[in-house]
Image 1 (cartoon, rainbow over the protein chains, first blue to last red):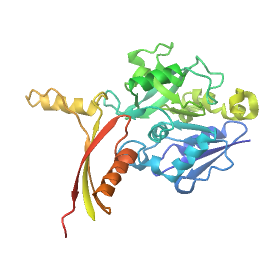
Image 2: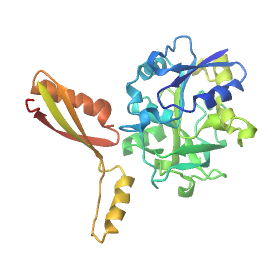
Image 3: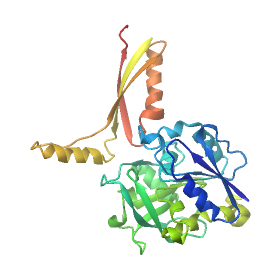
Image 4: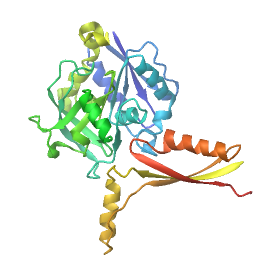
Length: 237
Length: 85
């Protein structure tokens, strides 16, 4: 049984969706933990869901990074455990320095609520095993999802294979038109150097069953069970 | 001692500022020849510290740990001793 902790901060709103999506994955047991006293002992993976923690005050994710849960998450990530952040969760992971770059106001200033396509650029993370090259279709809903970094960081992230998801059209072309928010190099999601921490703006938990209009999120979340059961690359065992 | 720090946070010059671009467009609609607008925020913090050196260290912590994200923002500040009540 893979034990998954879902972190809930004030203003988190996607934790129930993750609970439901993970209930569809065989061999996964999940619990939502309140940020003030989140104890990650005994868990294999942690998820930081979307929302508007602390009203996005100061910057999206800035106040949540100082929460006790984020400190616990940092130790959890350093121990090599699996961490996934989606939407505001991605913003929190970047603010906390667990992932490179930062997320700023969308290039067009619009809040984007839409379905997008993205290509899986790396299957060397436990969250994307077997998905390299797959074009996934997922919903987004954010006003501050434009991923930016300085030139050196961008070059490093590309060279080290830390780009996990890239916005593309449905045929896999990373065109400007396929970029919903102005992110550098159409980047939709990145991982840390250890590859155990992944963040993305789209919402895998909102497309994990056909009833919701798509199942590509399930293809990501379903990795949780086998990744920890020993089918993933040795580095994650 | 009580200090008041006025901390100004702005996006780094190389980071695009879509809000500033929108404000620039709006100011131009007033007939003004505005070439560039950068938007940020000003945060005024009243706090206790033993002396000015400690106060400046406290502001550094505020700036780097929360108020500005060094990946995308710079900050500057003015520090004053609070006027006695």
